[in-house]
Amino acid sequence: MVRAELDKQPLDVRRMFDAVSKRYDVTNDVLSLGQDRRWRREVIAAVDPKPGELVLDLAAGTGTSSEPFAEVGARVVPCDFSIGMLTVGKQARPALPFVAGDGTQLPFADDTFDAVTISFGLRNIVDPAAGLREMARVTRPGGRLVVCEFSHPTWAPFRTLYVEYLMRALPPVARAVSSSPDAYVYLAESIRAWPDQPRLAAMIAASGWSGVEWHDLSGGIVTLHRATAD
Image (cartoon, rainbow, N blue to C red; front, top):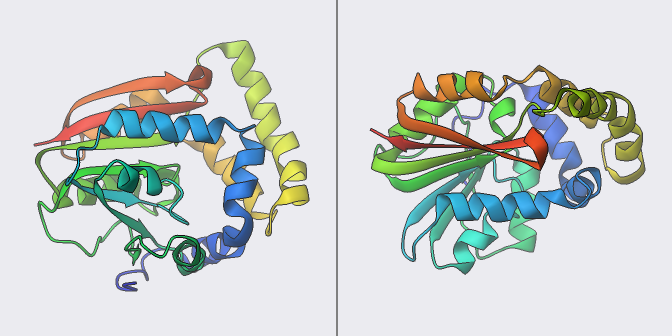
């Protein structure tokens, strides 16, 4: 694992993810009511990896999101800023080539990857626009980007219920299943403050990507944004 270029990420955020790493996958499954598995399948379909293609899975955590790429024959590189996450992932999935890296200064050469994907991690990059520019830098011309991120439910009454769940129900549930429940208060707040679908699309387009489009999942709780490198 490469530890280079991690200093730009705030230490408290890195420590938070280190702290939740042991039960991260289980906690996500519980909090999403199992929907996270469906969302991962949608990411794979959106990336549409071909055998032999090189895919960067940024904010890969323990590698749960990376395994499906390897299973279809793509060469996947899981990358994350949390050494704790990478350590847990390497123990569980020793065949995957985990790399430590800061999303605002990736340790890869220009035009390296056929596709780049990031699931539920763009919010946690200290400068998301800089992260998107870095993803464009390391993607070959014509390569694909898929961002899977929490978003804004499109039906107003449901959006109100969803915010109530995030701020009131999520922390108690996290206390029951997570190795570091306080971290999920931060996560809930970061989800609530995140840009909606059109604003994130504009950020992606302004960061060097073209043909930006999005597709809502679970009523807009999660959105897939897709784009192409110039």
